[in-house]
Image 1 (cartoon, rainbow, N blue to C red):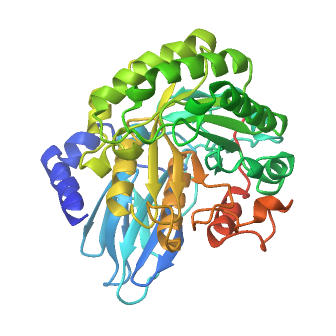
Image 2: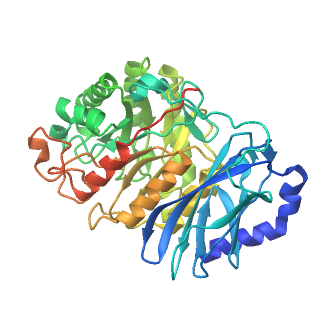
Image 3: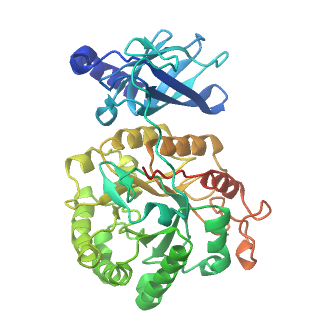
Length: 460
């Protein structure tokens, strides 16, 4: 991480911040900063920094503030290029948030360390103007009006715009939800009562339907599993949730092994569900042991099959290294950025398990989010094995980051599997309660508390 920060600082010096941002930068006439510590642990913390321009539009800006305690240090930041000199911290924008219109905000984030106290930073300035919250110039623009109703009622048919998933009003949205476990093993967990609970008690936006291809899955009964997937899509639709159809390839890791099966399956479900507003297609769960070139080739053969029946649906492509954008294979997002899939209205999958995947994975996601449309189609609060102790601090850091970047997610898993990643205690799916504290694991309780907070989907 120190090497990453040093590299960022070196790049900033080589380019010259004045040369990069100075010619078009204007003094802000007024600004406001909301600084919130979103999580804190022994010796460390994560904070959200929301800067709002209350004056004339600015293109190119620098946010500065002071760390009041000598022991406070910047460790990592996102949505900007961050640096620290002594007690002074600076953040300059990345390409996609370089312009701040009147009333517009930039949501930044940082991870820091401290050895003494951890008081709130002071003396926030935007382009040299103190951020007091006062307005010197045109009044701020009113924030978007949130819609009411179910997620599908409000957002309608989704599409990709820039690096975001956007709704029918062309506004970026974040979907938060849960993934099933393998439906060949945990079919009893997915019934009217459990899907009711997910929609109404958990207030989930999304149900990811994990249909394994091997391991007793689709290849053993293509018609039966296709029917089961369609049934869960209908159940989600009836409750106003989006349904992500996950072609859950894992072993073998090369998706091309299942290319013919994928074409058959997606031709069927796309034709059947083309008129629905709530369907998202995930065409390869976790490619592993295979190159990005091979994954891209698979995607460029499967996507046209879906498009032939459903030309407007969002399609998600798995990435190298168990959908880690290559991080788990020692790479990063550059291979996708430099050689993207040749298709429109697509996103790329990113997976993490909070106890195993921490700073280097978060840094890659933060960097990639400004250049690629991403969806965390699967993540766990525990280790990559699906077991072990829940890592609350890392999970909270991840979820805060996804919220700030407006990246959607589905948690593994909405099931009563005998593993700590499961949302329910073993035996829960034999009953009818899927929401009370008595049936939730530690992971389930945390996810329910996060997912059930209001979405405030924008409609204007």
